[in-house]
Image (tube, rainbow, N blue to C red; front, side):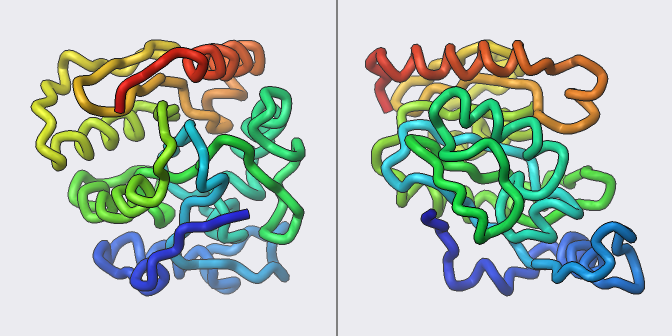
Length: 232
């Protein structure tokens, strides 16, 4: 499984608040959950991963405190991944329905998974400057993925981060014209289209805001879009 891990990412400390938090979570004596008391935590920025020939880029929010920040791979080892990967497997995007750790054999097909921010934020809340600081790492992924056709944005923050990325490239985007809405496909001039989904967080899936059926339908819609010609 490929990862795009730029040399400077592992030691990135542009966001002091996030760097301090990710490392605090990884320390046993401070914030470690009892269930993971003996586990080794990643505690560093998390790289994107998947198929370098992917047509779809799945854009999440940020690493989970005891998921990605523990395992070192996006959506791996927490409740969000427990919801996401069975659906990806069913749709043909993943080689297996369970994602536990870096050595579990997971392979993605025609999909790349990354996030708007690479470090776990306190209370899952990111500051605008932190998202802007991380934009360079997102751009790094895009530059290495030559076959992309569609962005799958999980949640409003991922949606907005993609719009901000387009603006940084010189696209004249009026954000109010592209409001987040689950299942909506947004088309742009000279840029990849984006489809919105509610985030696969436990908060959304446990309350029924996002059901398995809803997400399966969205992934089927994604596959259908790939069969049409979309200009980059």
